[in-house]
Image 1 (cartoon, rainbow, N blue to C red):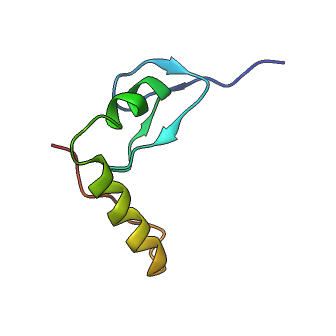
Image 2: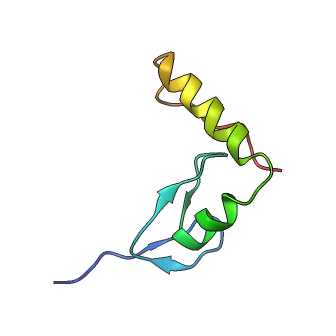
Image 3: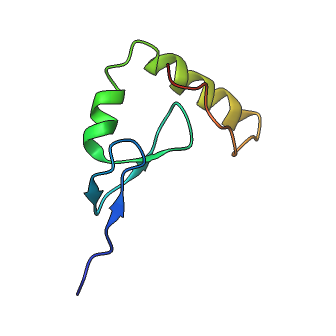
Amino acid sequence: MRIKMDRCDRCGTETGVTIMSMFNTQIICQECKDEEKQHPDYEKAVDADVAEIKKGNFNFPGIGRK
């Protein structure tokens, strides 16, 4: 069986596991996700995402990443 490899939108690394950024719609690797969690606005991004989901907005593009 062959695993489909994707590329991280942020760093370009080829990876078999991806997740969406909390800041925008980038699909990122676990290493970039771990780094993202250290950003000072990470909790603000998570809170904004949760608030939008509660309103029924499942296509929130995020707060942006500085």
